[in-house]
Image 1 (cartoon, helix red, strand yellow):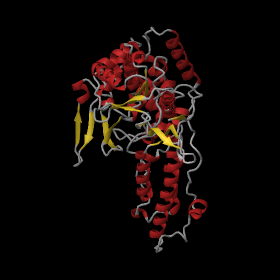
Image 2 (cartoon, rainbow, N blue to C red):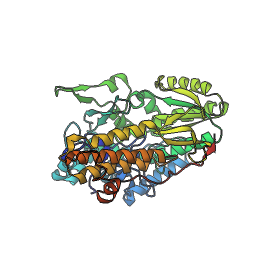
Image 3 (tube, rainbow, N blue to C red):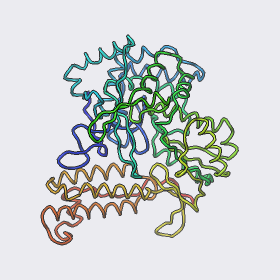
Image 4 (cartoon, rainbow, N blue to C red):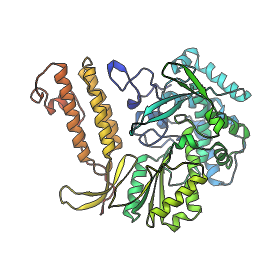
Length: 496
């Protein structure tokens, strides 16, 4: 069994430093931009950009892989086929073992029962899996309430995450292992999230390619609480298009309607049944949630083409989880109006304050952490249509570097501080490596050196700026601070 993988930006604590914990409060995310990927079932999928994607790169056991390949081949070869006998595959022992291994590699905090992976293994993993398989087989399985926590967003708001118990996570992952190959065959090419061999960077390059080809009228769209708004009846209908196994559909419905438990400021526990009462919502953070989100978003992407909007506005969608843009040759305003009408019929809410139509290159827009628009060559001064890390993402990393080098952590060892800085810098540059990255890299190198130098001066009571005692060469060569360098992998630039 593989050990728990690190997830630098989702843990807090160790040695007085933010960024590490013995038990992370937030589980490894299976999806969203800049986060880990979702269901993957091929062995040759490229590795992800974050340690949290370790589970995605682990090759499945031969029998599980054979099952997944057979399901995918049948779904791909028979687009109208409905699978009627899948529930028994979920509690197959090899599937459950692999599901547990995937969850174990992802790590994550315990649910409402506070049971950890270590607790399970001390109890006896074989015994624990046998009990779960029996509950599923006898249909006595009932999900526990989902523990809700909140993590900060870049705009100062908080994002809710649902932390299921490990038992429920393993059962959901087993379901994903069975259903993922089937629905992967149906997803549209415009959908990039939670899929094997696809990434957020692929979506960024797709948008840049559309802009280069003349699709310069853009709908920069945003949905309000997509995961919390997915209507259950319509989602089950979308699943039923491929799945006729009522026991498996019933299992998914139980997860959708599971109560949510929150703890208030006084430590009191409150349980709500909002999802069941309102008939909508999929807890963001569960193993099954990314797959369900993709299946429902497919209705919009496919409907856009079926209703003729793609041809009418010469408008192509690029979608990643709940984020999407529509790149048009025609009128972006008309495309935006059509999009609003479709979202209304899908019972989803458009965030009007963040959704807009813009014209590139006169205007810029952000998507998946990158800014698209007209930039100028520092050597020739000529304009070009390109991408670069957004100012918000650069500013956020600067804030994180400032936090890691705060005076509160003067008792920490310099090596520990540098190690945490390096994790942040490497993780950030692994994702932000497209387009014009040199200005951002230079600014971040200066900021990280300046903050570390100030921290060292405070720790060792050195007066002045510390430039003589702690020059950049010392920080990089002796302490090992990462220096971001190199050109970004530039999508072919176009004149703007």
